[in-house]
Amino acid sequence: MKLNTIKSQGGKAVIAAMMLSTGATALNAKENKGVIMTVDGEEIPTSEFLYLFQKNNSQQVEPQTLDEYLDLFQVYRLKVAEAKQEGVDTTSNFKKEIRQYRRELLEPYITDTAFINNLVDIAMDREKTVLESSHIMFIRTHDEEKDKRSLEILDSLRQELLNGADFIELAKKYSQDKFSSEKGGYLGYTPAGTFPYGFETAEYETPEGEISDIVESHVGWHIIKSGARKPAEEFNHPVRSYDEIKADVLRKSSSPFDTRFFEIRRNNIENLKKKHPKMVEAIANLPEDEAYEVLIAEEEVDQYANNPEYHNLVDEYTNGSLLYEVSVKNVWDKASNDEEGLNDYYNANRANYTWDTPHAKGVLVQAVNDSVADVIRANVIGMSPDEVVKYVRSNFKKEATADKFNMAKGANAMVDNLMFGEAETTPKIKSFKTYFIVDGRIVDAPEELNDVKSLVVSDYQEQLENDWVNSLRGKHTVQINQKELKNLHKTLKKEKSH
Image (cartoon, rainbow, N blue to C red; front, side, top):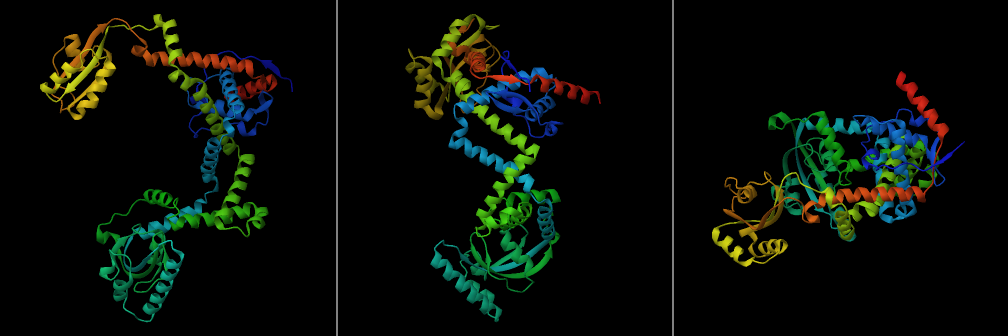
């Protein structure tokens, strides 16, 4: 493979070009096994370049050519290389973030759609019925001995009920649900989704008039007496749409407080065991949650190796995060926090910062009445604008407010009235009845950095970006595989003709 060492031309990398929505797809990236370039000897797959190129162009009003995008991609990859050299990818916070993203990204690939749809069908069916029930509850204490004793008592009570004991009397005497115990445990008629899913399932699966097994929920344990069933329409309870119910099922089942969370996990475990039979023995004696993590880790490796879509999204997010962190450190924070550098840049480029129209500057004070306004006027004489703002906000709280301003005519009606001779107006804050200006004056051009700071920060950031990129070009070696690039041109031209 013939490689040409290059020093790329300038140009500001735009992170948005690399971190776009995940909805786009790369047309031919998954088929391409070549190498488009190396950065410090690291081979960069053509598939990655093509994926991002096509993804970027799908979001652009005027798509870039392959060669135009190549320069952006080089800068992107130079920054990623710098981030790795600085050790960004070795920090615990970064590793944790990437692990979490990979796990979230994996979810759609391990989701059993048929299993989820069955849960939705169950919820849809229950939605049509409002069910009457009563219960006896013992609250979970997280004290092993006390909870063990509660279960023993509940088991004894259940046996009494099966032998004909009165449910109402036992509920009044033993139930720890203070809201229902006085009513003999009666919960009334409730629609599906009212109670925790495990409780609800026991309600619906226990025949009318009969007693359930002991049911566990996140708050404790229950014995349920199932009552009558009536159509939801009798209670004016609207039946939700399929999509609404599905969204509700997905939301609730994502929490371990919902027993469907564990049903879904167990189903996933069985599916993953079938896909990775070599792991069955390794997880045989592990607790369920640990076994699941082992299988998930194996599935992540498999998806990254064999699923181009997953591979590309993982790499895109990982490299985009590296680029973000290294850019914050070397450009964005520096541009915002380097006061000396900002002042030097402003003074060297002062002629570039002008206004088309004069600006009014000063401190706008609004007060609840003239008496408060007079006190402020008397006490702020000789203060700087910053001192005026601090004094008013510290001493008058709800009675007055003060804000520095620097604006052209038309930006604020109160400033227009007092500084530009426009009509009197009413303060926007209704509790303030009067307003005045401290140290107001009209200026034709910026007097200091703060007058145009946002513009200067933006321009200074661009200079820092360009200087940084130029330093990266000298620090890292990029080699373009010209043969691969030529082949890409041919392939894309051929696809476009079709």
